[in-house]
Image: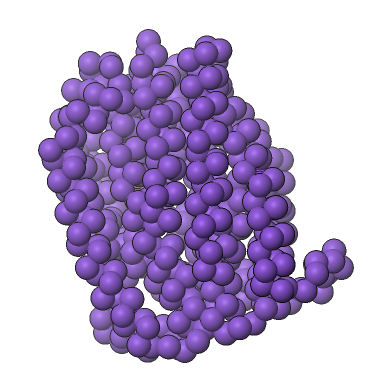
Length: 422
């Protein structure tokens, strides 16, 4: 999962590098703003993957094959309804962004080009989330690896072809993602069929959809994860929007550094995904000793990974920045704010790993409460220190990540693994 997850920020790195070497900073700013909007919409719906993983893993641990198949069908039907809603409402988004954003007209124009193309991948992107969650819940990390590698590899190849070969610029970046998402979905459905047969699940019939039960728990779980995801995405969208008000070079520099932070988060998500599957299986089997062992393993790896990433950015941060952009002003600003990126892996690692435990145990309400407290800390920190301009954004982000780790760790420290089994 670490290997396959690293291909996701690798795509972002390629996007940034390709667009960052075009003649104007507003291309990079436009991709940063447009992709932030897509991330807000798609990752807000990331509960589709998270809840599918947790519920499937618990059904797998309990040996309940009907629940395994029902969870996939429920999540897929909800994903399609949400995708159709996004496609119907998407024309309203950019006019709203133009009213509230202080970005330049050039950045807004490029963001609009990206957004209006990229949004058409919504059905495939949301269904892919469901498939990844279902595979992980069944303790199959090989299929998600294949799908993610396919998606990101194809995306990168098309990126280079459309932008450098055809000269489509921002439109080429968006079109590459749309084609890659639908190709991945087709392959994913073939893998579902294979795994369905391997686990000897009952043959699928369309009539099953009308007889599915358990939607109440599914929606309650997803409501809390949605609130959690909303707060998380609002933080990064606020950073993109507020950074744009400081100038095109600042928003572009922030985009470069955030790209590296996403590299860290996706690498750590490899551990988090494994924690989701292992926690869900242990909860389904009511095995507290397995949970205790999992806590110890994650704590050790969390410290190792946090130190490793911080060292990489400390020793090679300026070199990495130079790989992503040749615009001198953007490189200078990114280097100026690099110390924040060096500190963040050690601060943020715990929240990523603990998220995996909570998702696997389907403790969505506790995750929601943790995120609300952390989001409040982010808002308060920026409001009090906004005179520091872009430094205030990075400080508020650091406080946000620290609060997430503390508020997720406290219930486990106070009550232990037994709390997850209740």
